[in-house]
Length: 278
Image 1 (tube, one colour):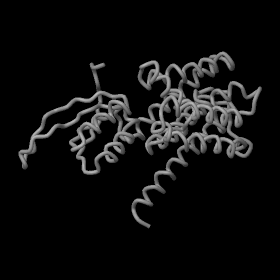
Image 2: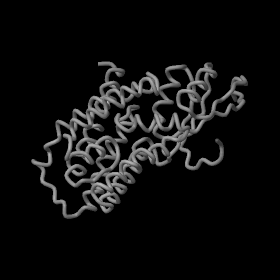
Image 3: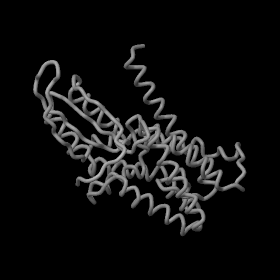
Image 4: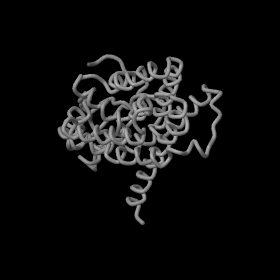
């Protein structure tokens, strides 16, 4: 078995584990305790007295994927296909797990922290492999694109609205527990997605400068800076592309550069603080 096949197995195996953990956190901790921590499973939690949560999650995931292709394009949407299939499947397969694993619900803070940790690990592993969980990840990208805002702001709008709706449904104490889950999830996702910084700085030297620049600006929606450089040994003058991206987009840019120019040279560093710019 060659290294490429091993790499593919590792990537998709890690993705499956991530989505399974994401589903387990919902069925073990969030659904039984009426905690609405965003995403399509949060919507399913709100309406679980009206429609089966497993069915609603599947419907929402498929619907969001279908509108993703015309609104976001094929390239962006492809990363959500597997999540759209596996997440509802894992939710259904683990839907009765709370019947076999009894968890004391008297300590809601402990339940909240545990849910956030498991959910955060699952979310982080999924994004680290270059995929999404489907669901509101798609909606966040649509909002970000058409309202011309960042993914972080889009998440606040979309998932924040779901959490607030959950507060009206189950009480605002449960809403605060949901916010703790989301906070822990965001922290763990950043840690798992390579390093402790929220951003990564890429320094790229490539013979396909225009194609790489176009990919960063038009596909990922980030600005670039072109820096003239000279090789210390060859004395050859070239141009270096510098850009700063959110940590969660690390894999997309790394793979994108490699696909455009497999002989490109690039250095990736943690970027701990970014100020200024558009």
